[in-house]
View 1 (tube, rainbow, N blue to C red):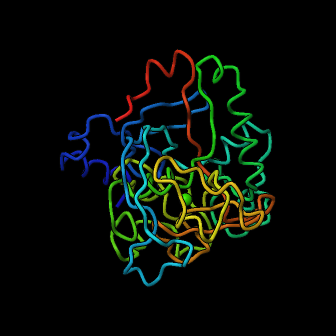
View 2 (view 1 turned 90 degrees about the vertical axis):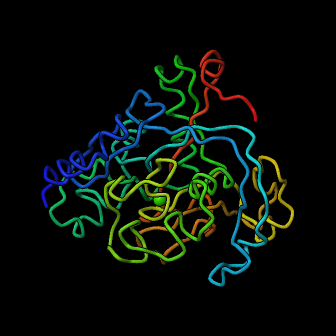
Length: 294
Ligand SMILES: [Ca+2]
């Protein structure tokens, strides 16, 4: 079925009418839920509400690793704006002047792109934790972003898992079993795809499961969950090693549940490693937009 036919079908079914503001993106992408903020380079954000959730693997999840246990209650006291999509190659290059991605025309993975000649909406990958943080700082320093009172950072691991679950308690945000139509992972494909090619979760976020793994702010520790603060945890102060957390699995990995944790050294990078960012409002923008604490 053509994209136009699908769009007509959706309209006829009342789906688009029901949500009013949904827009239609590029050829392979899904309808995009309403965006709460779009910044000066076109990055879209959703405001995720404050709330309480169970972080980590449920006791009966036999596939979970030890560092996903024990499952524990976490309270996030503030809402936050998180990217609806992984940072794209176009966005990364616009801010840094570089596109380090393996999967781009001229890149080492170009032979796997098939007929794709434009990877601008692929997630940027082959980015280290240090480079992801540098991107956040460079984006925050853009004149338009400074004027608007917007600062960027990586999500904390708790924010990431809360955003991924989107109120669900199953292993994946789409159920307890992996289903390939919901995420680019489990080695179904041999490369990343354009961001937003799979359905969003209930918070309107795309590709939390799969496509590329996403760097989080936190250091990794195998034992952190046994001692994590209940309120707004920021990860261990002392890591087991020079390891930061990556979440969500990727195209080259087995199906990764909401609680799955990966970690690698801060300077390491690969063709499965990308990120998304959180936007913080400061100054007058914060007063106008920040939700009250619960
Ligand atoms: Ca992802």
